[in-house]
Length: 259
Image (tube, rainbow, N blue to C red; front, side):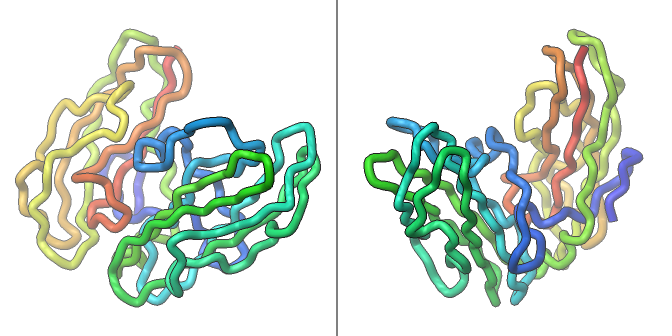
């Protein structure tokens, strides 16, 4: 299980899905989604919005059905429609489960829902694009990502709160905090160097993970400090390797506030 006393992290919640077929998922961080491959805005903006740039199921256990419900809202002052919804490529593993938008015309501030279903019997990664179109309007496109693995069942159940460095004066730096990343896989892993997703307000000061062979349930330590360059809330993600959804080393979320 996760602890937040600077020791270790062993479980993560499957991001973007609630384990049911009718749940409303929370939108992921739009800037992080864009960095991880979500389509960038191009051409005229769509009058439709989902409040996110990507739908990410995270790491899902094998043979586990999950659904992600997306709310599509009309952000313009006039009516938009009739709408048409598509998911491409679509398969029996990743498909539109319920379409409450196609054929509708949304008035200003009105919304409708689309549920996307994912389930896989073997370890894999899947990607598709959800597109919502309307006549005489720019389409809304959302990247859809999902991955399946036996690790998925170990990652879900508890949503870890970020490791919070507290509040710090802009231009100063906190003491380095030792964080341990734990291998929840079934095999010994030789791990790459630790990285930060953003690397802006947080810095890695020591890395005892790079090149180490870490056995199942074993861990390795990384020291991180908080050094805000601007006021406000800062968040980042400490991870080993590329940070794929089903990596055996779940990432540690870190946060802090500059003043």
